[in-house]
Image 1: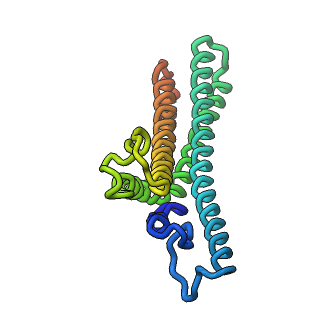
Image 2: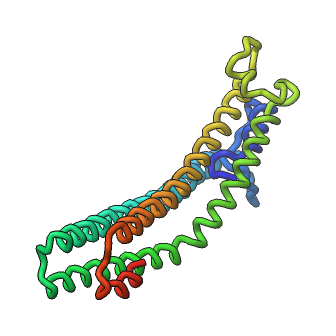
Image 3: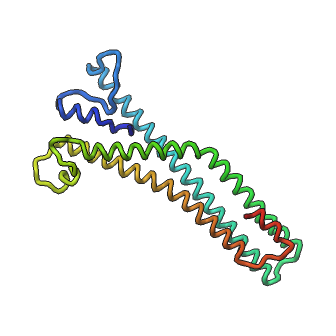
Length: 228
């Protein structure tokens, strides 16, 4: 379950408005509802939830930053290939200089390939786990939105909360709004993962088109296969 959005405390607070509940449902070997234990545990859970949330967001932001860096480097590589062909067509470079420029392009491509292999090996398993976890959470929280507050709500309880003029329990409203917030966050997480993959694919396609959009001399034909 997503930290900070366990349904058990919300359900318990609806049944017993005066009951002390924690952000996450937990069991302790002592009476955790007495002061000052309740206050200390409540603060500790809030801090833990904040740390877990920040850690999760930080990993996604770091991956997004790395992908943007690679996209920028691929754009530079595409521009180097374009300038190389322009100089070659206009005979602005001598043979030795042309070879050095082509070697620079190959070296940049090899460096980017190694960097992306490192990023993939570091984040591959983590992203797979996060994707599967988000899929399960999306289904569970969607089910909670439908089922929360029954029999007070119909299966379209979210629309009832937003548009109905009936007297709706405030706790049910808060529960549904929290679940909707988590669904939006999970959907945004899916968008980030899809965006970074699509960005890499589009930049690689641009480099490939840029490479084969010109006539390459036979002397450099073998070296082009290193780039592709």
